[in-house]
Image (cartoon, rainbow, N blue to C red; front, side, top):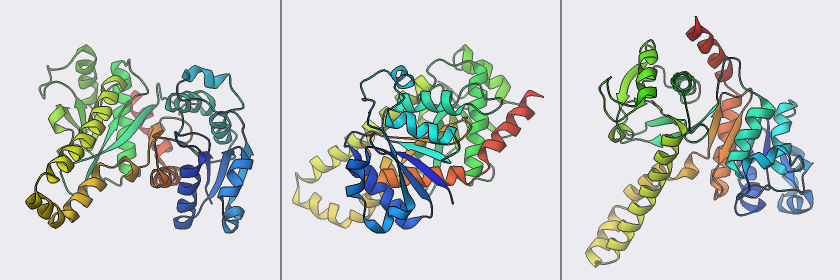
Length: 330
């Protein structure tokens, strides 16, 4: 049975949604949880019937969201440091944190270590598409703001492995995010990466911003600077569209009646763009599994982040990445 370490003190709303999400996950999947935090605050939140599946690791220090990520390496008593170290010491198969994303990334990379051949781990996130039932994977979305061409090539290899092993896409298509579809478009780094990526059978070429959500490719490769702006812009657009629809629906009784008739459509749309449906973003390329969640995560998001950790840890993705990178170097 897999063991998942959960940073119970991370997140913007304290331990309540994290504990609730962990309990929801335990109701639906078989695994053991290690809750890292102040047990005096955590134990009263847990029903007795779940205690045999949960152990506690004491951590009384919390890394604030506004602190520098580098502080995490010095603060060995923080909940995130101890949670990551459980994976390093093989006491847990994966770590899930809704806390400081930069600290989680730094600690996971330095304490757990990188896979053989990986130059830089990347944060990947799932994006909805206009094709029913299809999603796309974008990486990197924030781990590496300055990249070389060889990093982008490795992101493509890691993304392809994730698409095959986790998303169960038999033949994923890879696209390199650029400012035009032509090979000549892009900056010097993307143009150099394009030449190397052409060696991959799964590479479809450059894609533009308007292709991100059309389902034309399964894996979208970019540096962490572009990827993070893409992610935050997408979140902002989804929230704004929702607000605009609500504002205009309220202005007319006819619109209200139409909204009632379209309730099912709105429910499906909300589910597709809700980050809680995906839970968190995996840090791909480390010698283990780390899922980085949103600070504002609710219980549903925590539950799905744990499910991501279980699916990742149950797969052969890390072995596949090492093998594919070794083949790439030949």
